Amino acid sequence: MQQQVSVLTLGVADLARSRRFYVDGFGWQPIFQNEDIVFYQMNGFVLGTWLETSLSADMGRKLVKPGAFAMGHNVPARNDVQPTMDILVKAGGRLLKAPTEPPHGGFTGYVTDPDDHAWEIAWNPAWVISPSGLVTFGL
Amino acid sequence: MQQQVSVLTLGVADLARSRRFYVDGFGWQPIFQNEDIVFYQMNGFVLGTWLETSLSADMGRKLVKPGAFAMGHNVPARNDVQPTMDILVKAGGRLLKAPTEPPHGGFTGYVTDPDDHAWEIAWNPAWVISPSGLVTFGL
Image 1 (cartoon, rainbow over the protein chains, first blue to last red):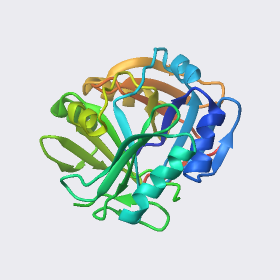
Image 2 (image 1 turned 45 degrees about the vertical axis):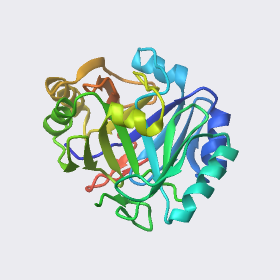
Image 3 (image 1 turned 90 degrees about the vertical axis):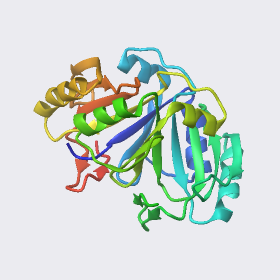
Image 4 (image 1 turned 60 degrees about the horizontal axis):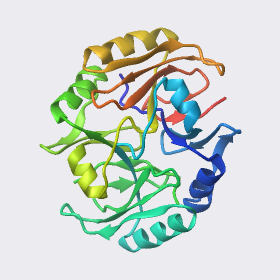
């Protein structure tokens, strides 16, 4: 099968609150939105923020937080990490972990979105990011 | 900021068990692995499966399951949905929801990976997938 994730869907309690974080914080533009879901066209896949009650009903199971996952957004320079985290906190995020230098290099911290989903904001010079946002693993 | 997710990291309890699902089930190839983490180069971003204890320690908080999120893998044809789900279940996944036709069209079901992370296996003819696996939203 194609080595491909088509969509990542996050359960959210309040669409407007979530939208503020992603649109005003990250500065991303939705490609579709209604009263139930907001979609963002990302780098090769689609990010959806869907009312948690709808996501839970669709799966047919109860969901709990914080889930055992994290998303990461890499920034171009070490000096971009803290300001990016500050902007996200101002847009309704929460500081989870101030940036540190991990053993493998770089500079990275965590904020949560308004639904307690974790975002790692990282400077990782080993990973290449194309001008259109395609990210390639590196060591 | 770039409309970009660099990495999606899943917490896993047993790396070999998780690897079996992704490598033998999805047929994906790791780009890096050690005793703590396996990375897969995906369509424009990186998927990581990291020992949940390490992910939890890195974030500095306890994590619970099943989290309020889902990943989706779109397949080329309606007739690919059920066989793909069968292969994933055989590789250590669990059937969560047999495929149905959602109101917006297509054909879609859910399996979980061995760590109870949800994968929606979908045929969605409105979304375009390039030969290299880049997925574009459509209605």
